[in-house]
Length: 210
Image 1 (cartoon, helix red, strand yellow):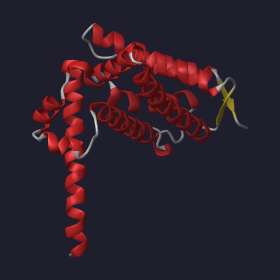
Image 2 (cartoon, one colour):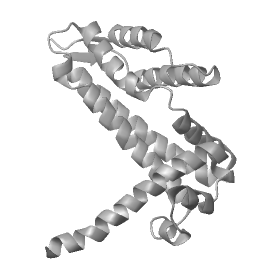
Image 3 (cartoon, helix red, strand yellow):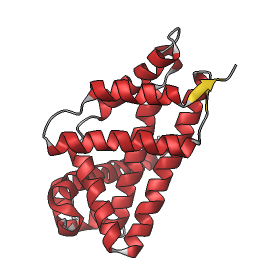
Image 4 (cartoon, one colour):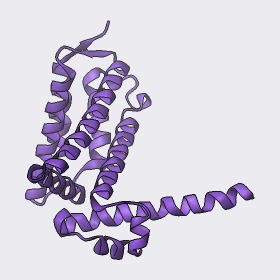
């Protein structure tokens, strides 16, 4: 019972933090990082400034925390999509297509996060200190994606014939371009094109391990 009483404030604080991050995602997408105030984020979450500053020292710290959370969500989606049970018995191209399909369906048309990411990137171009933070956050995402790719290819019995970082750049760039185009044209992302293009590309730069 004592442990439950101790854990309750911890859970409450974690819940408060999550609500603030959810609110920030919405407000930052709507108003931009520069225009979004701590007050607006607190109003969206239904909290006071005190609740905000007990969790984050600044708006920039909150944005970085939001990036960290989105990174974890992306990794979780990738790991779920690459569950070996989902492509058991399939040939290489079909297996890669299944992984891509399961991941892309859950990621498509996230206009809100795209806007937040673009805002952070633009602010980083204008402000060297923010730019360093953005680059560091982006490199963590890239490292995670490359690690996932290496594990997934190993599970498929494949190895790359070119540098892993180059392949990651192409795959991420292709997806980002398709997402950006879909948002600008206000239509769903072209999943069929991605499900054909990305697996074909990946198979072209890999070979069986045995």
